[in-house]
Length: 472
Image (cartoon, rainbow, N blue to C red):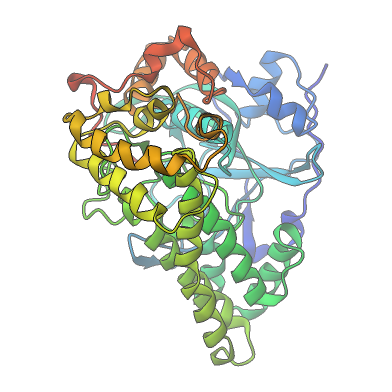
């Protein structure tokens, strides 16, 4: 059977200034590492023979209906505005309608140079490709909105970074690749007609009930508020929350220097390029608000009198912190087995987190251990947990089945940083079994999986990952 992708493209019908048509650069010897069979079925893709799929997902062969293009966008990077970014190493092949009736982008990452590559080679090396494949699929299994991974291939070519690395290409699936930075590009250029067209397209594709630019802003705010709270609830640190990495669909996008907490600390930073801690774990809610303000600044440029939108946009933005906190509180209530509401819940949860930070408690294991009653073992001073435990048990008396709530909210398994690095090192040595094993375990994060208990363990001192790196 030949590979069939039922493309139904709409972005390629927009005006040319939204993108640049670009063919992928062929690679020497593509080899298929993985195809996400479940996702392929959902996208109504008929898989073909493995060599054929390797050629297609490497960009060597275009499936009928594909219209490859590099999207244009701008963005704030660590607070500094760059007026011209764009897909420097990614190509949108086209869109499909899934079995759920929703529209999805199919994109190749690492497919070669584009007009936006600047001095880059447009390629990706194996490590970031496998990291994004594993972590994005793990996030999906955790129930967090995210882009997904359809396929990964090696290219048979060397990519030069600090040294020679094996090249690879990821096929990424997203509700769309529209970013805050996409709107910023046309606002900065003063192209109000393009901005209007983009706004109408975004509303029709993602938020058909939204009314006008401020309706879109409000919808993006609500989606992002839920997303950030969900990140916090599993100890996820995006690492590079630039506006060009902020999707208006409310999905997690661009898994570069991302990481998950081991020991809980609110100021934890892993990203090697985040030297000032701008995108630290606890800073993510405030950065999400900052990013929304940049979207508001762009959107109001299309109004006949931009000042007319300032008051409404300001009110929309100012409401975001409380929305994030409300969802954060709902999720963290559930993490400690609470469904009912009590005015003291915020203090109770905050007290636990403070004690965890003071006692080097593992974030994931502590919350999961609350179910079995052995969470005190996660604390360097178990007495610190005991003092909190008494208050918690008193609060739980109002609940019917707190353990069931906690089992559904607190994962056993996350993509631990040292396991990701271990997987990448093995793959570079041409052993992909750790990649497949990790993917299999992380597909069921809330199940105990007794045979995989080693994957629940935090890193030993010599395994601790102190820095993660950009995916370029």
